[in-house]
Image 1 (cartoon, rainbow, N blue to C red):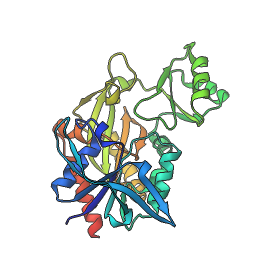
Image 2: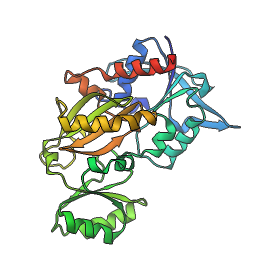
Image 3: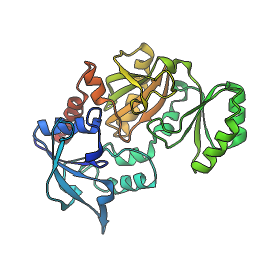
Length: 314
């Protein structure tokens, strides 16, 4: 089976192929004989209800500094493709939301991974609140009185923007921290949306586990250990990847989430687990594929394409 595949992503010349999950997916697609085309979201257009983009034929190589070749640009209807990979990184802003509205016009005739309507309706830090018993105590608000009451109850808290990504603007505030007022003021002028406030989990020192699910089934995991001088374990913030296995609690979490992910067409998902609690469900552009393989785990890119091909045959 040879598929025509387009990838909507950030500029390919800027990616770090060593850890880039999108690049891993492209390498595997090319290995299988699928034809690849590349475009950035600013090239999308909708004319009289039909969605177009200017795309460039793409070949990829696992060679740092020489990892891609692009062909001549051409304007095509996205319905000409069998599959579109929706892989641009957050921020999840109105520009991102707009792309999901456009891609919704072609799905499922052209299979968009992940389903654009449910990407739009399942932001990382909101979708997870459908499973409150699996989460640490969590508040979503920008109301000072609500945050003060939450802080009074739980003491150590973490504040982060609702639509942030990659560990940006994540702060731990202790019960007696005098910076709280200044941080609240900074968040107020910086972020128009609500924020996420969670009870601080000391288990984060042992790692923030990224678990990958494909079509609702567990596929692999990597533990991300934060640097000694940082709260955040994201690998782009200096976290170190470590080999890991699932605990019984983590398997319970995966089993609970699986049906909801399949129902929404969220084929490739990364969840974040600290200790016994899930903190996020990442559906926009989940990472971790290359780290898991490099640590001796499964090649998740293979599993993703097996699933995509089975859906196209169906």
